[in-house]
Image (cartoon, rainbow, N blue to C red; front, side, top):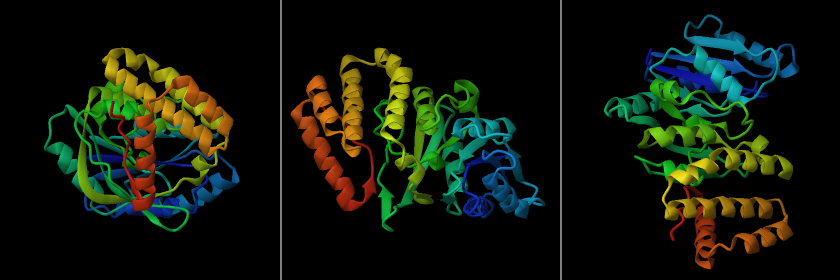
Length: 304
């Protein structure tokens, strides 16, 4: 088996068939699709998803697994990984789709590289709530650990995560304490040990996740604190300049979080506390304008 595609699903019975069909339409045929239903048995969404998945009951390479109760996305991904038999593991969110050549192109890319290259991603288009399209402009490859730790690498979504099985065997499963941003947590650990390849073609279509955007400020704070608590130890492995750059980016993210939630006093207070150089604020402001004006997605790099 070349590729196992894992699709965790929760509250998306109306889009799950589209996601599954996009995998079954791949030009690469030596694949399996593992749908992990995290709605919980006998819940309205669970029953609706079960009905939607009944369409594939006679499709030999579609596996449908149900959690008895709602767990979280990390648990659902791990359930799928334990079932997977592929040399490569690919993830797909339940409201996104693969374009037909995605798996073939990514497999070919990693097949041509040695096993120090453990991950691969591609360009994508993103459907925004206002009906406009956002295009990815992230093209970095090789050792991208520092950029990932800064959270300045725009993968797009968990749908763009494609790895050798060896990566999971070495770094372990998804951290189930992360109820959000499980893909970012996994990516930090993966890129610390493996290099990342890039295919410069639009090979997937992702949709803006309204559920994530509607998180309360409190939940966003908790998510931020969980990330920092887990990965602050990695700063000790970096040289002083790199550690400082990562810390600056984390602080910018915290200020942005406050501003987006209209917590302006907290943002100003934190700005005075961390004392980020003015030139970096100015560079970040220009970066935000460029992203909005051109409707492109790419990471901001702190230049000291």
